[in-house]
Length: 306
Image (cartoon, rainbow, N blue to C red; front, side):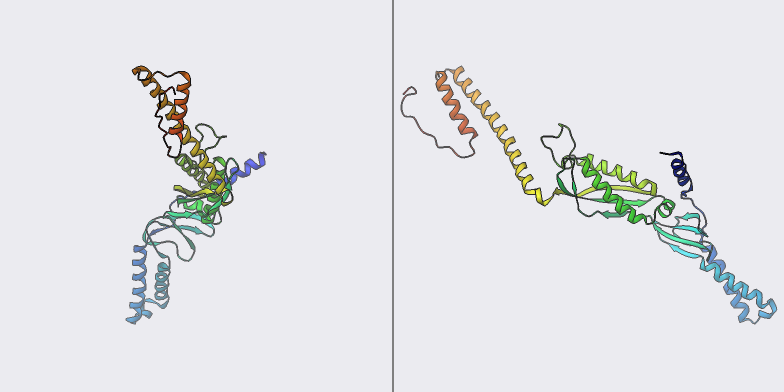
């Protein structure tokens, strides 16, 4: 990066205002003063003492009282006003109730400090292995620095929406949807590593929102599925993997049972079997134990060696 670019970047950081308090005061005192001035002017007119005091002073009292009251505004809890005077940032008022600022000259921009809930639309993206998936997330955010939120970006709500979508797309490209032959033994997946995925999404959102004074409360996935064009194929793949896994467990259990049966017959000397008979017995037991259908036994009425 060139020296000029670095200098411009540093200058931009220095010119970005930080939130501070200023340019406001309690509105009840101003309201009381304005009412008293207007009331005094009306009283002088009503008692016909205008010419005694002077018409100029009566009009001045009335104008000053009305102007003082034009600077009043009511602020709800968890709201703020960003105050600017002739385009220069003066301060932020976070106090609720009846407030007052310089009338007519001071511009007041309302900023909500309440938590906002963003439900991102369902996005169709490719995961780490290139499989098309559908993903969506919900993000809870709030304004932390009002000055940055107002002056750093054109529209901070639109910025949050666009950057959230970009973060979700980037998240999907970092992880595979599900475990596969090419995934590592402890590799985190979107479907299996929920906590790790949410932590990664929250961290990235905070990094993207920090320059604009917006903080992330929570983030969570609300929708995660394969895209319709490969959903059926992936379902059959998952079913095949489940069947293979189940078969492995069945075969392992059947072999253990056959081994115990042969060992028990040999130790108790119930019957003496040669290798051929043992092989036949093992074959029959494995068929019975591993078959997914009921077997029909055939009773041998003769001797074992017939």
